[in-house]
Length: 280
Ligand code: UTP
Image (cartoon, rainbow, N blue to C red; front, top):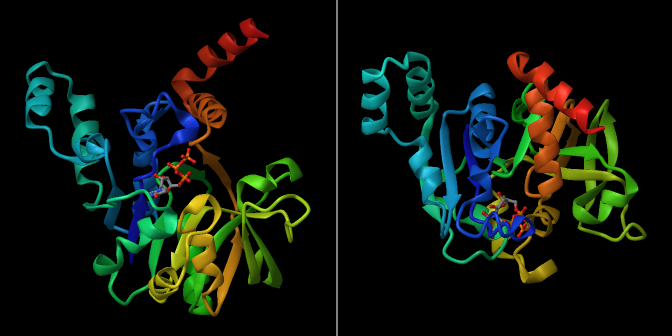
């Protein structure tokens, strides 16, 4: 299976940090966000990845490219561990790029992948969203896609105050944690929301989604919304992700994610804990 990572957005929620650098390259603890996304793809059995980029996104390509000078310098100075880490980044997967010429929304960004994808189901992984779970989120979706031979999207229960920020689904349970979806609404008010099951940034889609995107008019914020295109699919399943999702497009969540990941790291755990204790 191939994966598409949309990473062309302006990241306006994170300005000014994202004025000249992609939010997908903001580090979470010790790695850029998009590297976690690619590692999830690889852990899910995917090694053909298309990143949708745009203006000011050169550093994404540079990060996954080979850096002869840097490797030479690290080798000469005997920094073997770092050298190994740097080389591993380049070898992670086959990565190619396509440019979204105008930031017309997530649906439009996915449409840029049409030629690369062809006729097979493919994964979509938002470049500003990290997931953590025993089974990688995309792998869980691939399993649902293969079982029902249909598109599958990851959903997560969100508290009422967060409903307005996400695409929300209405569905009927078909098995534990899997819903057949009847309705999807992009960023509804709490009153309009059909449930509190939110779409959280991971999808495995059948290629008929491209026809659906073609038929989709600009929606909320004048953008071609992926949620509106998904509503046009004949059959689609929602799978509650057994794990945790982190949306780093939002500055506070980005900061909290970095702290959580630093706490997960054996070497940094106690230093961070001591620091937090002094602050409270
Ligand atoms: P977001 O809606 O979170 O990204 O899209 P954004 O538009 O950059 O963010 P804000 O709201 O202005 O802060 C989720 C993912 O889809 C990509 C983004 O780069 C992000 O990784 N995206 C979004 C595109 O590739 N193209 C678009 O036109 C919009």
